[in-house]
Image (tube, rainbow, N blue to C red; front, side):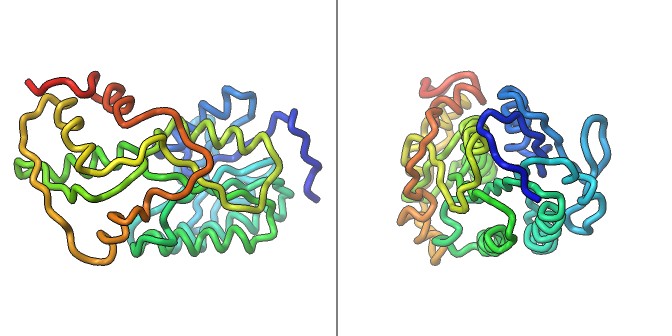
Length: 267
């Protein structure tokens, strides 16, 4: 039986994918607002619960007594469907049996507009959440600035920074997402999909020079218009979304946090 919801509740919250980028920010954010957080990992560690989405081991014990689940776990690569889709199905079967009253699944803005295999699997996972019978909210967030940072790092390995200057993104800081998760857990499950984006719509062309400057680099930027449907969808704003809620931390804020400066002249 699902227990009645009261906004004043301090809940026991199971967090899957707690060791990932968002989990690392989300666990302390949820703890700070008074929830009893139960981080989950495939491997046993002190203070965590061990459970495997892909195989199902430990899931019943992990969800037992949980009021809510923040579902962050994902496995890009060969095991993605087994972990993301089927693993989510296993998790929600256990959640239904345990009377969990809110599953908050964090997904990605643009998965219904950008033709990428990983995104198609995320869409299938969202469908599992909707059809599970467990009260849910789906939060789609735009890309983290650290993803753009990594893309630029890889793209500049041969010397110049090679980018499609027309790529449009709206990077949202991981801490803004963590705080929004806390807000959504303070309300009943919506049964809907909501979006969260960063405060700025930027092109890779606009982001490249501040990134180089923050790193103290004089590398040239080589603009290349990439072919194909995926690149076209990104240039057309497929990753930008129409979020009603936005974060507050900017690309410059991220660069200062990551590199200690932003927009300075290269040295």
